[in-house]
Image (cartoon, rainbow, N blue to C red):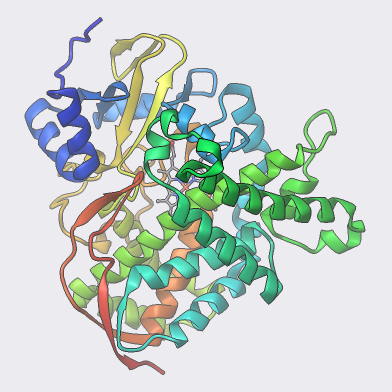
Length: 437
Ligand code: HEM
């Protein structure tokens, strides 16, 4: 039954607009249709809103109220064991097991590793670069070490090679429909992708078993997520099956590497577009001790990171399917209805963020973002589990780049869609013009 709300036009055209230019599509729909409307997408109708009362109710959705939106194809790509596609009780249990390992104290254990990874990469920069090609190996190495727990050079190299093959063989079409997921006698693109996935899962599986077999005092010192999940036990005292832990780790890889890669590139782009912000950030960093503990407390660096993710929400919207009848923002909706909030719209509201198209870190100086008006990591019980790691990593890597090298920007950027993310079209091209002390 049609809802008493404005609808976007033709289904094919609406999907195309959303895929081609999500920020632009949301801007146009909001100015033509208002704060709340229905997107007619190829995979269903979705009520999307940036009305504050709707967002507030969306944030309160529990695991019993919703299931992830259209994830049948995603479950095939990532494996059914990842929290990204888990529903209800299973999702709750996974968050309970993994959540504590992504919080404050744990993250601080990674500080010197993140610094080391960034410094090693930046030391090799010269001439002209595409920043996205440089921030990718940084974000991958952090995941290989912090999430997969690799610390020996040979193993890190092996993971890099396996992940590169996996990502190269991943087609965005696999996420779109399960019809693309056919093995075709082991010769098709899907079979090649699955072979790479199984190879990486097998490697992780061996490591998970090794952690379980190792003496307790040996693993007690480890702070990586693989070890934490390998040893975690549910309420019944059981370990998770090895294959499920491996799928969870691969889910973390997929959710965490490209998002952080893009966020870092946008931050450096905007700092160079606004030299006064760069000057202010450098002055703050130069005056502080060059260690992670001090840098993580710097208010302007914190504000730069938050403003980057406001202006460029890498994931422009987050979607759910209601599992029960629910009223959101005063609109009565039926079970089965697709619902969404869009950071791309909320972050562009002039009443929340005056001159919303302007990069202005001052908005967040001494000002914590409010959950209802700041959605780069999504919302509620499915909010990004890696948000703490991502913010921490962004601050430390930006600090290393800004204090380590002088770059010149080689062109302007516009956001374009890449799988589920939006990224700078040209990858942020820069020239290295000098080194800083
Ligand atoms: C700047 C970097 C990042 C951004 C912008 C980002 C953004 C997001 C967003 C928008 C969601 C969807 C939340 C929702 O549905 O409400 C999400 C989910 C998720 N993210 Fe991130 N993310 C980032 C980094 C990471 C990292 C580093 C990891 C882990 C290593 C990670 C792991 C996950 C996982 C596992 C989920 C699914 C959570 C669930 O369904 O319960 N993300 N992220």
